[in-house]
Image 1: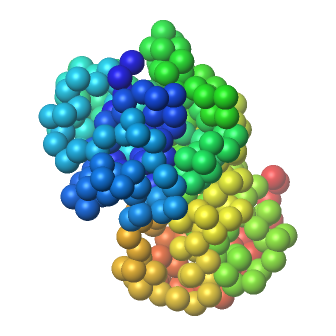
Image 2 (image 1 turned 180 degrees about the horizontal axis):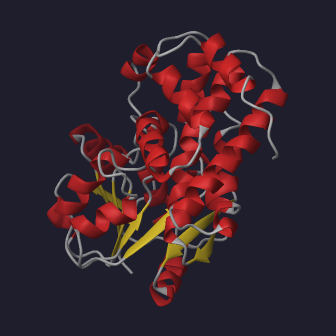
Length: 323
């Protein structure tokens, strides 16, 4: 299967590196001309994945028409741009969605957005605990590949699996997507705890109570509990809530240190998806009647609606209840 990757940020470039590891030709679509030039001329992407020499089989392009001969496309663009990007992709080619988020306004998951933008294209979701630099270096990684079509999932898995990159199959597309979207918001909360010096006890509490919120929301949207407890839910949550390698965790750390959200977001080239997902998730949760106090707290900090001590006090003062 000839593979293409749409989106040449850190994760898209790492996936192209993975797919070209066996010498296969991989076409990488990039928005920035300087990225295309660097990949094709220097075998590097210093803008998004510095210090990683890229495999010779990766060819970068800015022309979406160059993706027409691909047998599968991995879509790795910011969640709020996925609709417009997928609409440009060749029709009928299987789309493996690697973006994590919920569309503003519609509250749709990425698979639902892609189904509207390209109704003829089969859809799968790739989600799990993955730092791009580690995947690009060939370090051991396990990930969820979710697809309603078992035969297509098996073909995709055979194409992307490597000795150090192990996909686990699922037919719960909704569960895989909700885990990936919600964990970005919860990682901001854990970063806040780090930046504010609240300690490891607080971080552990946020991870566990945040996972409870993820589960409530996921079940309300039709996800399965075992998916949320797997790699694309709890696994990804643990990773992104534990390291400044996570863009969302580092954003939260800055908030916890007292830096304003607007300034932190303005100086970022890479996207911290949790900042865009948080208000959409809050709206979707309220619409579904799902209580998500940690998500509400993150929104308050991102919107500068309340000072950090007040937000922390409000969480700690919630009524005592059964776990």
